[in-house]
Length: 100
Image (cartoon, rainbow, N blue to C red; front, side, top):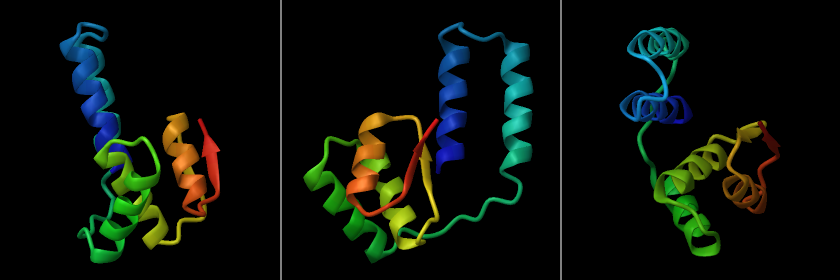
């Protein structure tokens, strides 16, 4: 999901004129190469329960809560993100966190 979020961010940067069309295409190409081996899974009841738990206890958007739910359900070694609120919520969920 994090990689998909990066793609959405690239779209916004291009739409707002902060990167050129050429830069957008280059970055998109790099991102697509990065996600070639990505595994996609269903939103299971465990993930949704954890996401709801996170939403009830933190100021998060739904997608951020789903990221945390997935990390908890998959027993992630580390949760790496740049959003301070999401990292704090992930830590409260028992995840080891690292800020970028």
